[in-house]
Image (cartoon, rainbow, N blue to C red; front, side, top):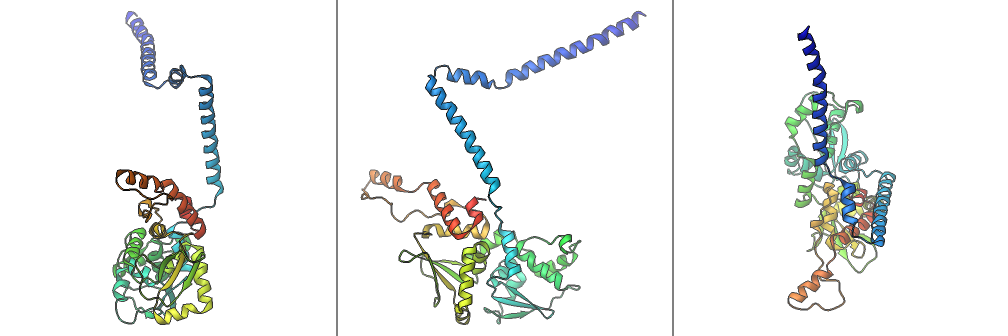
Length: 350
């Protein structure tokens, strides 16, 4: 009996010890946590009432601004990215410059994208007979490749994504795996398109800048880019910007596109520097090809936009640096350019 009573006493004392440990651990955690109210009281103890009132107004304004920013983010339309735009480019065939013939079916494509994304097409288009507007008949060695599988391969080269099974894609990917052995495996989409932009391979458009014009003008009869001009591809411009797409479509309807096609000449796009300054051109193109806006690509102004003359020496350097636009001002300029070009990804900074 005495042994049973001692066990009961020990079991009754155990919860009290556990409760004591919990209380001590809670006190230690509370000691380590930040006492925000206490810190604010210590901070404001020496402040005057108007200063405290101004701080409260700042907090209320910041909370209201955060709420407005959240509501604006929810209200604005979704900005489609590079994959979506290139999928639409493949589907709607903007500015195609070559036809692939496979099993008596024509697939209008863009040489620059195929060369940038696929080693097979890079080697094949290097052969004679692959000029602008040519027809290339393909006979694939992989067995069991039908029209749907070939179209899925081309869409994969454009977007970097496989079709889902619900969209009629190959559930096992076996056909595309066999095609991959013959055509090669591309890099990430943005990596290949950035290499395409840097190389200018098969470029068919040149961005030129002038201060003696209104908005934008397109003209032909152009062969080699001049210093300061930017080589690019009409397929990418039309896929990413409805503004450029309408520009090229009007030119195609007028018949001028046929003249350039016969002359093998790129399209010269004259841009008003009051709308799109030359120094922002590389950053805009980089964003169109990669979905990444890099402010480091914005070139500094050729001369400080100041009314007073630039002095010599340290004071002159200080004066010049004060006249240079800040990163915030450059970002606002790029926002205005994105609205003009209807380039939603750059406007929303995504």
